[in-house]
Amino acid sequence: MMIEVRVPTPLRGFTGGKESVQANGTTVGDVLGDLSTQFPGLRKHLFTEEGVLRSFVTVFLNDEDIRQLSKQDTAVKHGDVVSIIPSIAGGKPGAVAFPAMSQLSGGKTGTAPPPKRLTQEQMFRYSRHLILPDVGLSGQQKLLNSKVLIVGAGGLGSPLALYLAAAGVGTIGLVDFDIVDASNLQRQILYSKQDVGRPKLEAAEDRIRGLNPDVKVIRHEERLTSQNALEIIRNYDVVVDGTDNFPTRYLVNDACVFLKIPNVYGSIYRFDGQVSVFDTRTGPCYRCLYQEPPPPGLVPSCAEGGVLGVLPGIVGTLQANETIKLLLGKGEPLIGRLVLIDALSLRFRELKIRKNPECVLCGPKATQKELIDYEQFCGMTPDLSADDDMTVEELKSRLDRGETPFLLDVREPQEYEVVKLPNSKLIPVGLLPERLGELPAAADIVVYCKSGGRSAQARSFLLGMGFKRVRNLAGGITAWAQKIDPSLPRY
Ligand SMILES: [Zn+2]
Image (tube, rainbow, N blue to C red):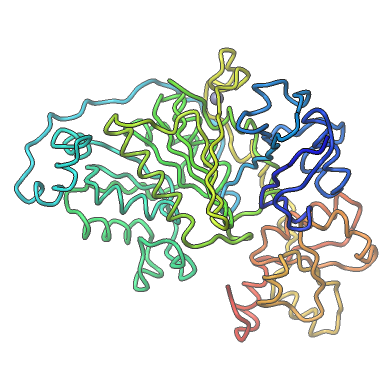
């Protein structure tokens, strides 16, 4: 029986760009098996070498997670839709520190101060809320007494911070330690051109204060780590996850589960968004949905894959909406539901997500009782061989001496079109396994990408495949454009 399978953006490279394909079978497992026979590149993304569905691949039959049904053996019938739902992180790998540490304590400290009367100025500022039946004076006072932590002051954090500040959320904590970069301005609407080069949180605080002086901004200008996460998070009523990487996402989830604080989740990739609310007191956690992260490099980051500038605006605004509902205790929160947004077709889909009885964190037989080393969990153990990276200066002098290493560019074709090194060969990192035959086994290979992340993965992969003389170009083509050839465009 032919069944429709919806293919997520990150995997469409293997289905000739098709979003929806037909595959044959009577169970979900058969259908996915047939899918990987039709599109062999997909197989390693879906199945382990033993043929078991990978644990980071979440599959839905219509709107139900197959783990809640009969897993791979779930029967399919005519008209069913099988969806592969990838975990998407957003940004760059490696934005969380380690090592693991145990620190577990329950609940929040302190109690909210008694509501203050609103000043005349506040009455006027919040008048559209005051006349709203589900907010009113008491709701506005609740917001003014609320504390929300936004993890990440980037694409998602920008609309979140602005809308929550405008709504009068009294305390907004921000975690970020980045500097504003001109390439942020395409979507990070907290910042202006004159902020380029400033610490993000400094610029964010100015912007928020300018918008609403009622708001107290708490700057956490540091990495969120297993050491500090519980201490930081315990002071807030709601945490909003606007991170761009898997280690921090799992860290935020786990800390919120331990502290019993709701976690408003959002993630973006290219034209796709996901939103949910994780609150294990009444629903599942992020780990119930995605037990484990995909291996590094399998799901490209926004820095590598790009993102439509308005998409974090859509997703971040939905997160702000959920946050305000939670603070007010109004409406139907997005607990137990995952909303998928496809900005290209502008379709919203809603999937049911349930507590996973086998969840190591929030299940009845939970085994994980403390925060762990999230870098290691996400397979991002630092690459000790990075010492062997080639600098752009070394490559330049080698080329000047007439050496001709094989220059392997592992970016995407659209990036290659923007800028490339002369005499380089393009093989996007995801296609490397099937195009190994195009590489010279004996030559010196120098792998590069935009800034060195994907090429480091490609190098490890090639070394694992038996190539001996492979080096990674540190800093990628960006470093080359900065230090060697400033005439090249940077993106
Ligand atoms: Zn869970």
